[in-house]
Length: 113
Length: 111
Image (tube, rainbow over the protein chains, first blue to last red):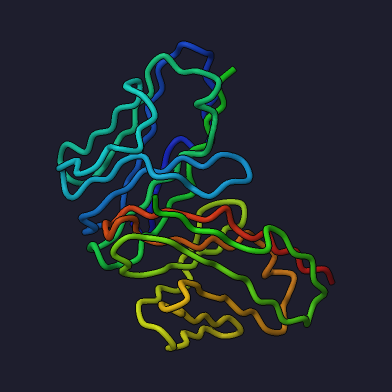
């Protein structure tokens, strides 16, 4: 597609439920990033893939967070046993290389009740 | 620890005014600095700066980097209500690819 596509746009879940957020990067982009953005803050890095390899997951806040990109294209961010503090906008970005700008999707707004 | 500090955090101006947004950074193994505009949805890419003193320009927006003093500015001339947004500054951390963002400057342009 023309840009980074994320789904769903909005997700409401009850505390304790598992959620899965999808990111479809720009076609041909080898690098894919997940960020978490709290209200009034800049995005914060969660994890990063180059093709199917997860090169850095140092930003994942707990072992309840898991991301995969099995075929080097679409990525899924999974959050298990959600907590209220997981409520945020989850942004996905992709780039064509390590020295190229990242282009962002519209994000998934996750609300945990 | 790598960090990015933006100022001011918010700014209200009238249409036609010129604004300057500031971004200072501390990062190991600096490679580049990026500016994004965020309205209600995705941050949209504005500029990537790698060299000191070379202005990048796009319409009424321009930006410049000072690697000696570790800061960048984003200028917007003849502001319009459509410029109202949060402007984010970011640097790749530790010379790596993931970005460290500042908190952003919220610009409001009043007609």
